[in-house]
Amino acid sequence: MFTFPDIYKWLSDAAYVWWQEMKQVFRDEGVLIFFIIVPLLYPLLYSWVYNNETIHEVPVVVIDQSHSQLSRQFIRMCDASPDVRVAYYAEDLDDAQSLVSRQVVKGIYLIPEDFAANINRMQQATVSVYCDMALMMTYKAVFQTAMAVSQKLGAGIQTKLSGNYTNREDIITTQPLAYEDVAIFNPQGGYGTSILPAVLILILQQTLVLGIGLAAGTARERNRYGDLVPIHKCYNSVGRIVFGKGLCYLLVYAVMGVYLTTVVPHLFNFLQLSSGRDLLLMMIPYVLACVFFGMSVSCLVRYRENVMLIMVFVSLPLLFLTGISWPQSNIPAAWQGISWLFPSTFGARAYIRLNSMGATLSDVYPELRYLWIQVAAYFGLACLVYGHQLRLSHRHVHERLDYLRKKRAVRQLLEKKKVGSRL
Image 1: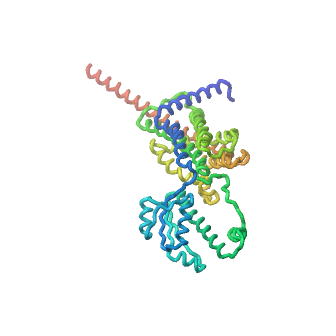
Image 2: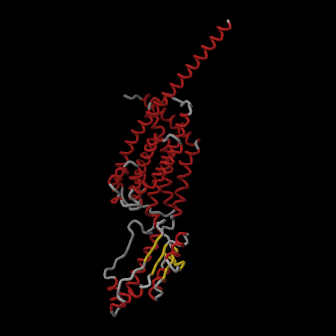
Image 3: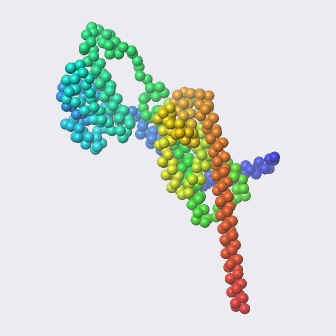
């Protein structure tokens, strides 16, 4: 049974660990960069790049082998669209491909010579579209513009052949069912509103794990070179170490979490539909899960550079595994199981539903439950990891002390022999 002095002693020791870790964070330039500089500047840069939401005036090259009135009309309609700009004309496909390879244009429209003849014979005509797939947004602009223009041009030909007498009949002929295309939870229809909130949540996890891993790698490198690890009397309890270190990281990323989830979306006019209370109750388990996850992963870091290689390698797969940029229903079951190991999976889903879809806290209860499970699981794993590291440090210290004692004994023995020889 714990008494008040025991509780006070436990908290005092944890506070000592917290203070030592806080000083270490602000002394290590690498940790400071990942904890402060990167979370402050990287989201601003990323959000600023995609602030326009969609791409307009994408340059394309046209190969007009038909040289007919219909082909020229198709080209004019494409050039008049907001997303595509006809920048060049080419004689053949080789010339057009050279423009794409030099990144002068992002797409090719090839109109065959039988384009107008097929239409006049009441046959289906084709237009070949070649897109640069290096950037999905340019591909979307080039391809969807060609589709929209072909549908518009086809509707005009259809009304001319229908023999209608009124405009209303023409509308019914080309569009018998009226509809309006509205992007759900993405009124701008752009990349930033749909993907960037998940990226902000992922940045929080990745920078936190990078900072913790960098600090762990630094400590392990120093220990590798034989430096004695300072052992305080509070280090007999692993729970105090994990609690003190975790409190340090939590306090730092409480500020970074507020900045990433409220300030950055406000600066770039992202959707913010959740209340402050719901957002706070979601971020508490997420930041805690990231903290203990980073402390657990730190056992894999032997050198400072290793953590950067690991986290940069998994960043893009983790974004896909959240189910935001790629449909969750199309992710294989095995990969979904792997995604449950990372706090960003449930954190990004909960944040998107709260802030972009207007969900309530009860709607994201499954995600919150999994986050709290991760908090408990990774706290226990962090205790096991730090307990193992503590035992290794104690053994290293004892081996070092034994070595110094033996060295001192040998020195004393040599001195005695030297004195005896003189006598």
